[in-house]
Image (tube, rainbow, N blue to C red; front, side):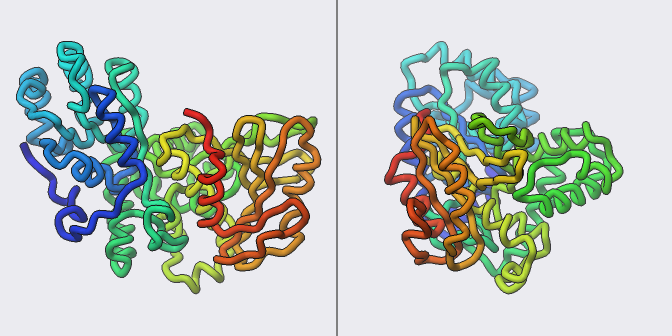
Length: 405
């Protein structure tokens, strides 16, 4: 079996393993399910997590051409030769394995935690699970490090493990990451012949972070059709690069915006696409506000996924222009969150959450303004709490506002 040692670079060379919040959930699920599927963007540490959680597991890198050839020549023989437990890395490269793994599981239903699968393309993975592995697999999604996992996570650098480990090399790392992403994921998921245009699309999309999605505005400067933009957005979404935040589904008697807002999962990547390489360039950038908003949204989503809860985050905008950046529901309680990129919070920053809070009659609300400062005033205005991003995530966790699975 061939191991791609670049996949475990941090595990071997940096030695110090940074614990992932999702690890305990995965270890527990391995006692209850025959297989585990861990999806997420490339290079977020899926392999490292599984190798740490299951140190005695065998390992197969399924993007290795020799392993792909071996699987396709004799998939049943490959499954029969595996030593358990087994980590099968990037299994979307060999989707034909799903049905053979299912057969093996059905022959040994009492065995748990035997198949530990990873993948970077959620759509193809989920299709394989739905068609062949339903009821046999516990599914998790891993994103880059959160602020709760590493204090080195930042707005300018993001949370990819290798950027955290070697921040001085982040410019080269992000450039290489984008190129690898284009060559592997984008090319494998589409018939795009001009990857340079797709690279321009990613850079253009970065300038729209925090905005409602307008496919026509994206298509025109690139000289492509709206359906092409839709297909390209789908690639970014299924490979875990972007978060599409839908508008809140209750209208409170108002006409609402219907298009989602778009954010990148990793703030370091979107800063790279925007050419922002230093704190000074970030502070002086017109994109600071939407980048910070996206950073807060991503941290909330990481918090939800790391607790093995489903993603549930919204925004609000009505026809009159009233907008609240983020809404997180929890039963009858609705959290209204306004994001401000300044280090201090003013009472005017609470205006929109207060207006929307008054308009909501049928459920309780908690109103929060989150800023870049580390110690904002705890009370911004009557009934409105001021917090930092770290305080926001701690509050959400303590208050248990994560949606039920």
